[in-house]
Image (cartoon, rainbow, N blue to C red):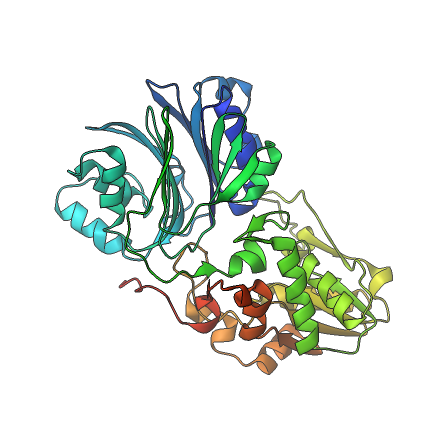
Length: 449
């Protein structure tokens, strides 16, 4: 998962990009970067870490200009190294270019091998670098035509922004996996992965950038084209389940509202007699509220999340059980003691964290712990920009629900059905979703390696 941001035509472009990236920090915490153009030159700065730790006034002062793009990264292709941090910036025959990408190309390895065989030298492990080489080698004429030529040779998920000396280009893949929106602040156009970035800088949401659409913004204004062959649209339903911020509007609907509907649907499908309904914070809270309202089981706070857990910590020499989880979550004993507890979480991946949470709740005095998951079993890996483990590591790929319940030591465990998920997400309104991580039905070809 990653987040992208772009702005064209604002005196404080790099400062607003910094704020936009801060609002998108949930989409990636490994690295962040900004590239800015003053009309004659593109400059960039990227580092490992969080947005607020990387950028300050002196750094932003070195990024002048009225246009900028930014990126926050959570690695899905290529390791967590500075060489893979974005935006990438290069100079080529067509001028200067910076690029930021959210998504994943399923044929990236094949394209990379072909490029390397032709003499290309790669500087990173990321699939995004393929686009740079393809643009540089293209004979398509204008910069935007080079972008189209490059992306027609790649398959998979991409919501991308490109910055040259005088243009900002945004492109979304024809399937529409990852979100991308268009906004405006004063006379400047804004591109962002989620509407929460627009809200922070007080930009007006104009619309969602459509699947297969290319937006080109320069001093002549904004131009929209659809240069790619149409394909059936499949927006990532897991954006609703977990990744997007709840205050965002995504695929035409409020993320918070959808998550509440997921919880309400879960309560209809998988009721349980309980004294209190709690959430695994933060992502499980809206679904828990929906579950509580629909079931009549009162909602309360049973787990407190620490917001100050860094990337590294010093473990005590004397072992403390579940140390990592205890750093992030702490039980509220007065809520749990002697109670039959239904705990709502958004998903189970390997099962190890769920096991530690259930044991923590029981150690805090819960009489029974019933786990309810506001999505179906995650049994298949994602190849479109979500960092899911291989199928062998996904507990639902090889274990039944009852077996998983025993492993996590819950008194009961139940998931939301796939039909319930897509219904709550809005399929009745005509939206179609990619749910390959639950169903194994992929809307593109798969990586060969």
